[in-house]
Image (cartoon, rainbow over all chains, first blue to last red; front, side, top):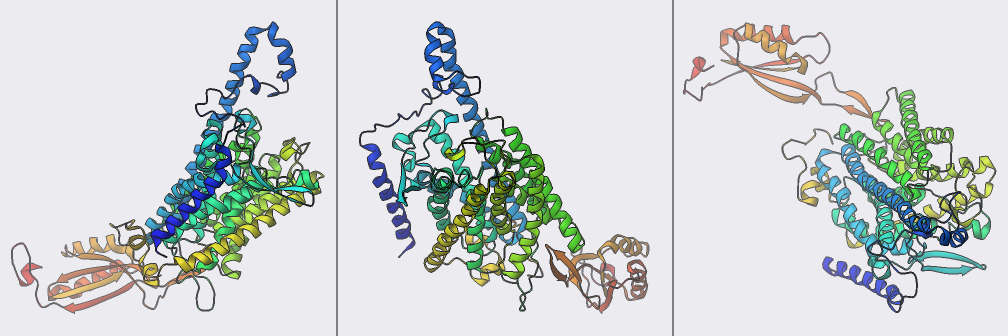
Length: 528
Length: 112
């Protein structure tokens, strides 16, 4: 089947999917009205119960006839409350988009100069391709049934979730509203949620480009970009954030608040890390990575300043990643969230540095930078639910776990991971989920996933929460692992995943992306 | 006329240039090369993986001198480039058939 036909087939399938699910929505909408201009979003209703001392709906009905000015002001106050939250969500979303630069710089800096154009190209295009795939159907599958965001005063049009019933319980699997962001989902709140969720999805999509760098064909990468954004990421994300079955483990089976993942240790990072592991394992190691007896060779990156700068950019963007996940600037837990995020990152970099210093005699800056990221990944799930001591502990452990994992993956599993993406995102993403199940201290999260009371972990008395976290980790590993394995195996038959040996030795830039990154410099190394 | 090729440690280049200038040898060609003799390479560490750097960075200095100057030039180079540590390098002396100055067309020892 020729390439053009394949692409047409994918587009046709997407259209059919959209048509099938959009049809009910088009035929006589009786649900909530969408608000594309934003003029009708945010008003008096957003004042009720917005703070402990705010008027309730009932109080408003009783008191407003006697206080006409106050009731008019209530409309503006409600609007402003929603405005603060929407601005916060969007700006944090922009910060997360900026992390794409961080990934691009980190990956390119840690890989060789002869492949720099190709590495940058993957990181650049994954942003665009992922976004389109997500717009086509990914967002709809993930958030189609989430039911809107109270903090943003709207989005209730997202009211359709595909549910199966087992043992008398409902298991939400995927949403069915919002394909192509069309019809009733042409709404400013839905668009805001889309933007915010899209940049998280793209963070996942860019992770495997790190583990599969320096030998992945650009053509097969394009297919991957669509697949992960349209199907794999959205399904698990629906189960955690879209009202799906993992989030309902609390309501359905009494396991704490169900699987909780505040900003995406599993939804974003573990998904990316597992996909990275599967992809790198199937692709095989770079030429010259392993000696005949299996011991690994070092293949140093070509631009350490770029790599470390990229890690700084990621750390900066992470403030948006974690603190923005409140979807509310008015939720003042953001101070704690941001600070926990920051503390964990410093602790992780520090413990990684100490580990390498102690075991190998020198403080390896590349591992320290990885440790910073690993800790950020690990704090992503629990950041809203823990105190600063726990945050530092989580970060310290992540840094050590990272070092161990990088060596394990390289030496025991013999999977070549140029950046340690599998360890940073996969392993430490799982640690972040477990850490929430241990350290959540009950100071936040009342009513999370529809379960009364704040979120607590094992150390604060809730074993069920720990089980729910473990369930999420297992579900992620199994689902993402299987889905990506099947996908890559099939894709390899149609569009080979790996470049030829000649191209790999020469460098991927010219043949894969038509432009050499450093034409002015002789980048041929004498070794490897 | 003789061509003297000296493979030396990179940080010795400035000292060598100045020492040759004192002897009246003001022209040279310099290239960045990699190599090893009996020094072999050294081990480095990257993310816990050892790797041997076999080909060490060196500088190759090429000067062409009149026959009478050759021995003095060699001694000067040895004095300037020696550290006493392994890896100091080597000097090769080769005969030269002809030397031409491109700008004027001069040939022979005048062209050096």
